[in-house]
Length: 198
Image (tube, one colour):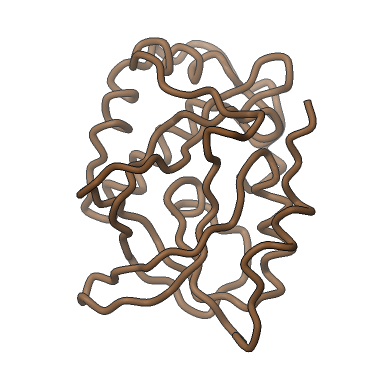
């Protein structure tokens, strides 16, 4: 499966004269940045919802048994809360590699908690990418998450750490919480070393 989007992203959303730019994180970027940043602020974007519809073949699963990680899906009137990072353009070399499993850079408008706005970049895995798994029942998604593990650790830990991180921001995502509620009991140890940052 050829799903590496690194080269494509290096041609997208060029920075021009920008010496620094905001990045919006809505998944693991909330709780595990893994890169240097100039500033970090709670923020949200509108018109999208967070969904565990993207396959993870390289971080929280394997090509033979992919895990599920979040992407954004359009939904009119919706708000997705997350974390914004002010970064230097060179950080995108790291980010393009981290998000290479089907994610592309898109531009978006952030709203900070004080009501101010800024332009930002966000990585989204849309339905056209080869790793996209799409919607399923909460029980089916939670079951797949509970069984998957990859070089960055267990898929269930990604889900629960995301739920905890959102709670730390004072936010609850109904989709994320529904999956946490559907997780079967934790009975299997991590079989991978947690060596990556995703």
